[in-house]
Image (cartoon, rainbow, N blue to C red; front, top):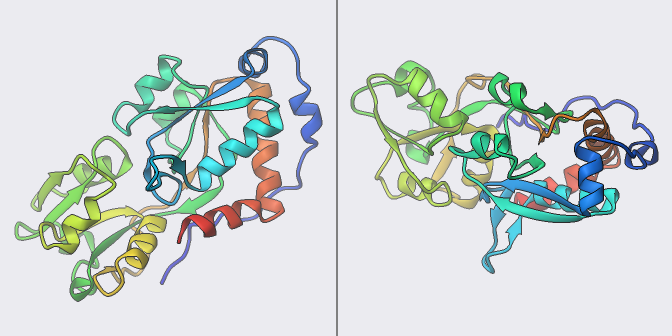
Length: 258
């Protein structure tokens, strides 16, 4: 099984104190003045951001956001968004930072700063275990008899519409239960981030399996989308670096993969 989603080499951490002590104009100054950092997240993407049985937000990136707020000396305020509306909500100023398995891409980089990445990953297919050797190429998936399912608005949606012209394509609105559609035979395959493929295979043992592809269909990185501000980016980068170096991020991700 390919596991490409843990980050690569990490640089030596900068001093956090110099970043967090910043005073002046800009997003970080606004956050510290308000005493609150607003965090946009979808809450539907385990292991990064999801709701537990009690309805509270959980996940590796939620734990990171809580830790970041503590380092900044402010309170975290989580704002619900969706993959389809995230960029518009960010542009509208509804939150200071967006996180929860967000892929670095040009459209998002135009309107905000990205932190250093904490995940390196790629798109891979997941299917019922009896079909794990069936959908090993894009051509094998893009057939009229194949039912592809995808969640709306994010990079999975974009990938599916760019690559699958012949297959039957269903845009399913609820990412929390989308994999149950494949398990129950209502869809055949989904192409999503490798970390989600491995997690959902683990959560559906003997039912859903990673498709045996030679390599991921794409390669990308996940990071946190921030309001444009040199000081805010420096502060978040320093925090992420520290968590990568001391094992904090890996521990949070491992815990959320259960």
